[in-house]
Image (cartoon, rainbow, N blue to C red; front, side, top):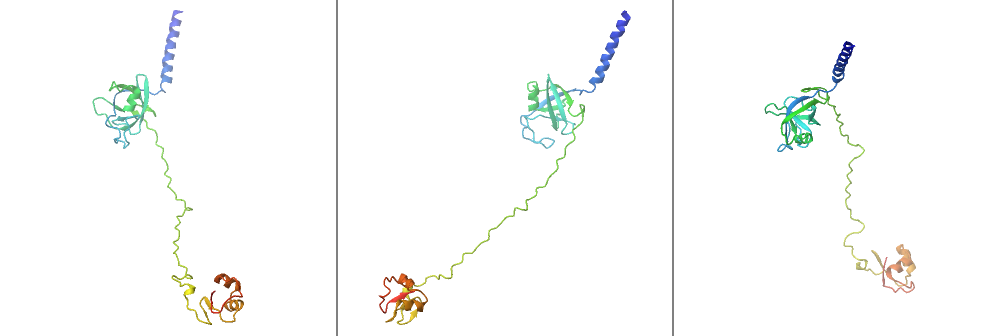
Length: 228
């Protein structure tokens, strides 16, 4: 009876160990790495990857990992994702140099340098991490809308009205010739009526009366100039 009990307990331990090995093997494995941080004096400067260093961002420097490698760094129960975008550190056994923002998230600011747990975010075991495949973004050329055509308004020259010559003398300034018509002026001859004068000039008696201020068409003295 005792032998059977011991065998059952041994079998349970073996099954437990096997289960841990089977189910635990799929989990990411964390490795320790001596880590420091940097930030003051470097914010805004170019990194080894060509990016501008953001002290408040979540990034890290590493000596050999490819640029863009994503890591998960753990420290005292806290974790933070970081991306490799710079080279270093080159001091002692240090492997990572976190940005100030990442160190702040982990609570590593006061300590300065300490051992942390490092995992590969995209597979692999640190430091043999896999990198995510970059996604190429197609470049779409800008096409100008052909329906929008710049329009230039034509320049229209100002043409002076030729029918109105400058410095045209007044009709009253024209010389009056007795018994003849002149340009715009007719002198009334003895015995002429306003109707006869209008017919000869190709106008109407009313038009002559309006132009010359005549109120009675029967009272037009001879010798008076008429403007037409």
